Image 1 (cartoon, one colour):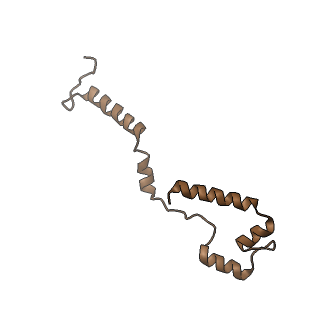
Image 2 (image 1 turned 30 degrees about the vertical axis):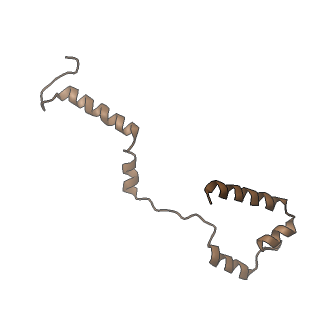
Image 3 (image 1 turned 60 degrees about the horizontal axis):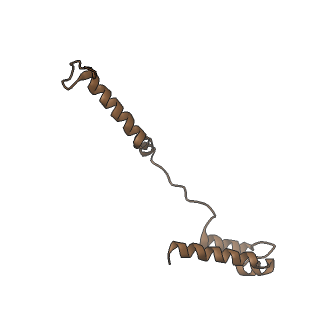
Length: 100
């Protein structure tokens, strides 16, 4: 099943849930207006886990080095390199201005 079909199915089921009465919705979701019982809570926690997103640890060094990767950093490096070649010339230490 493609992701588009999955999205359409999810949208259709969400629409179906919106059309249900509160009692029918509670029955389909396995809950009541009083909420979940302690046993049902423990069972759902064991089955689905906590309602939270997994937080990924980012390597601080790689994140820092990532700031030097991209088109703007490349343009700065090209400008710096071209300026250095204009001032020092092809032979290290000799002065060769770009306009000469």
